[in-house]
Image 1 (tube, rainbow, N blue to C red):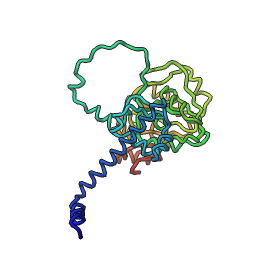
Image 2: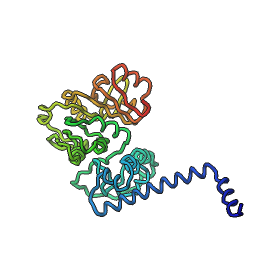
Image 3: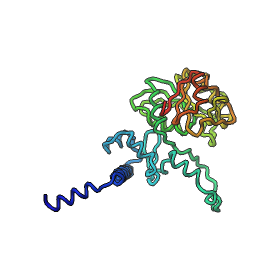
Image 4: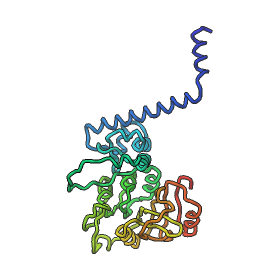
Length: 305
């Protein structure tokens, strides 16, 4: 055996598992960054591109693109994922980034900021990405469904995950959610009328004339708190009242529960666990809450369920 071949074999044997893992991780990140750069380049020639089209261009699955968009790396790119479409805009806000912002030291917030002139423009809440909840909830939307979506921050991402071929009617009081519904090619989008409340991103109608004649196959409710004793709660009376009104006219009721709302209570009651048919959460429920759901015959869908 030649000396060169022997040296190559010795080098191969000396590689440690940790080094191999590190190289694989670097390769994964490199590919992820390259895909994000290609997405950014595509948007130089178009104002928006659908997730499905990007996946086809990159020759990867839609789930891979969604993972890229919800990664920490995406925070460095001026990309905005909204209602199934990717646009140039503010970096995507996702769970890890939100948690990092909440843990920033107090000195940062205490720094003086120059006064700014008030503007009349409306700033919509950022679209939040939750791959598990969006994938599960979007599968519940069936052909010809009439569905009500509340003003939950995950709803735009959920709507973007609904397959484009599904024909359905989507009703909401949220401008943010309505814009996501309008982007679906086979969705009849209906926006509840009334006076716009920018704080909660909802239109409020005193007569509720849009909702009165309608019966919904499904309604998706996002809560501020879910508790085994106090049930489902909201942080604002207006949001709770609209949820109660819509639930009275809905055949199936779905409760969307983010990890941070588990075992929490807010001020205003939406309903008891008995009032819902499904609970979808991105985290396992504590024992007491799980037992309360079982007693209420509420079907629970979690990553470990």
